[in-house]
Image 1 (tube, rainbow, N blue to C red):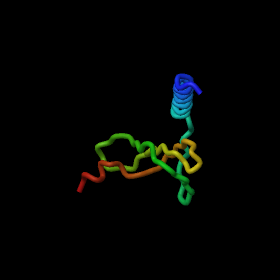
Image 2 (image 1 turned 120 degrees about the vertical axis):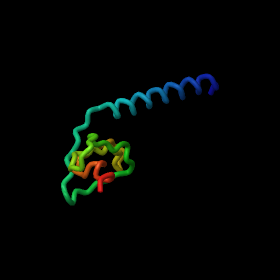
Image 3 (image 1 turned 135 degrees about the vertical axis):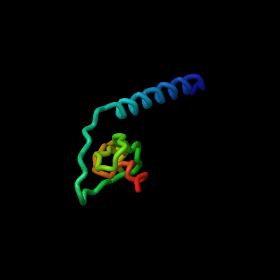
Image 4 (image 1 turned 120 degrees about the horizontal axis):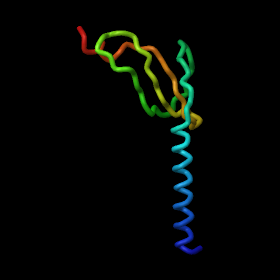
Length: 88
């Protein structure tokens, strides 16, 4: 096989794969609310976010992750805000 043909084919395959991954990341997945005892199959955490607040209170946080089957997923959960760590 010609080296040039191989390089072009590889470049096109990489471009297609990158577009596929980006489409998966931009798709709007519904965040599932966590409930006690829920089994999570987390392979890799992508991001953890929560609203910024200066007072210690319970907030709804969001976790985006890749599950063990390789699919992106999103879950919301209740936690104490980060401000609680800085108050006595």
